[in-house]
Picture (cartoon, rainbow, N blue to C red):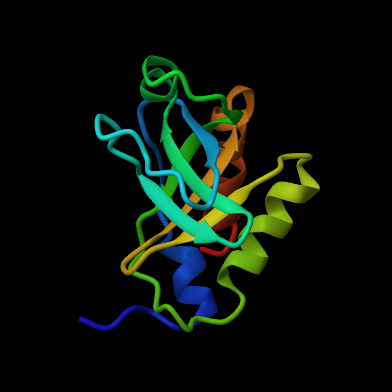
Length: 134
């Protein structure tokens, strides 16, 4: 099934879900392998290092330093990878509420990492945004 491309449909049907747990961002040097015990939600390689997004308790158990303790919100609409404006609209609404966001697009859904203490507030902003279009 192909993902949705129409912005209004994406916003109406995004159904934001706050996931359990707290996630953190860790950085390894470019040649360093992630600890075998980790189950990263995301691993991204760039020239300056390897970014891992893992549960905070996993990072602590592995002795990894981390930044940005975050809650994860999944936008449960199946968005097309080439959809235009969806994340721009969502992140603009969160920015207007003073909430920073790190967005990750996966094959089926978009995922938002927001500051741990603002998880519920971000969820509220997104739900209101979607409901205001109905």
